[in-house]
Image (tube, rainbow, N blue to C red; front, side, top):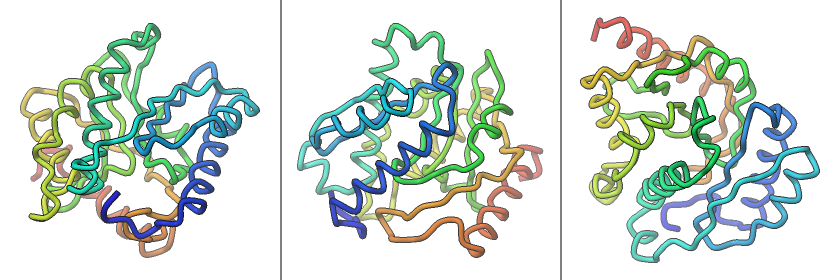
Length: 231
């Protein structure tokens, strides 16, 4: 995949395993289902075993992305992942039981995830994410929506992602978020600032530092202002 800084596959795999173990131990398997989307064709038996040993039954979407997509950029492949998740939801017998779809970049840990999820609405269309101050960029590391909103607004974004022109998946998601607001989908602010730790595979940036927490607070403030109708 193009545009990756954390390229050592053993280190990347270790990141994924550590994050998966974290979520298995953090969440109740009766309330949370874990879905792993793997688009490199790598085996997932170790992940399934790790989940099982921690009381979770792992759901998996595994495939090898077309090289023509990979050459475009990481965001193009991730946008197509969103499509596959929507397809999986439509085919899953248990999808009607899902209240929320929680998207988290695989190697990152949202330390206060359970508290955040407890504040999400039920039985309504909603979207919860952090948006940057110019309203053109959604933080796609972590966001939450209901299944219907995911299917309607977070699919078919890949043609909008043109990384060579500076148009990333985050911009495409921001455009979709504006459409959501126009259509009356509830924009739900994070009442608790997400506490995220880990390392970005794309940039090598470390999350959870003081600088990162300040940036998160600024985006959270903008989120509240936009929700209140002042922008």
